[in-house]
Length: 394
Image (cartoon, rainbow, N blue to C red; front, side, top):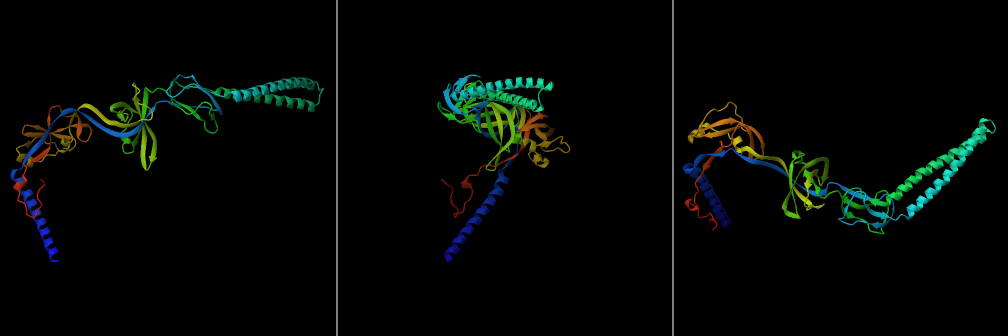
């Protein structure tokens, strides 16, 4: 127990010595040799940028999925991956035997119904003439009219039916809807496809890979700064040394929520003349929400400086022309020899460190940023150290 008390006493003595030495150093050193000066900067022209970062996916501007509306067997394929196609070009054919058989049946039914319709029409005309001369009964006339109307409806129904059969036969010939490049092919020759509730996709065709777009997911905290027409730069992992450029084309209003994180899709144009960008690449996007080039600017500290007349007089400076009610943030102080004077300015955009000056200052003027105190360096051996304190590292 005595050893523990002695150890605690030693630790307490060390702490007291450290506090006393720190207090002596803080009270003596600055007052003895510290100097107060004025920090200034020159009004100059610079570029002011502010940006939002996001991650997106490179996609073709126009991407069409080509499918089929009829079920059957893929008979022939005429294109493959990466093939260039033209609008209307034949790219695949389905087996037409079943569809042609259905067409023949429909044509036969149409011919039969047409013959029946023409016969009933002539019979009705004859019966009506006799009925007008009161040579046949009402029952005979009504029966002739009924048979005529029935044959007419059957003929019109078969006419409509054969239109659908012929259209299905036309769907068996699959052509490209646009000029472009085949991105994917989902079927093989001999494969059976079933067009039920969902149309099966056979090919995916991109319109023009020289004109791409990036769909970026921007966080809800940053989406308020993103506007159409803003400049964008992005990189992809496939070409880490290349920087691609574009601009914001669209800010979509639909929000996407994933793991309680809300993002909005931003569509960015991306020229691809060298065909380096490929569909599906991940893009690291930088959207410049502020992009001002070669503007007159000052450090933002100059707008927050409020001078103290007494302090300035001690270092040999004077104030002149102090405006009544000068507000920090719209007033800067210009250094003119040993005199500083206020100037009302109109500010523009800022990136936090630098602020644009729209009016009130000219390039080359020197503005005051604040006061600084220079403290000479003190070597460690100049401070008396307690023998109980650990020494400095070697």
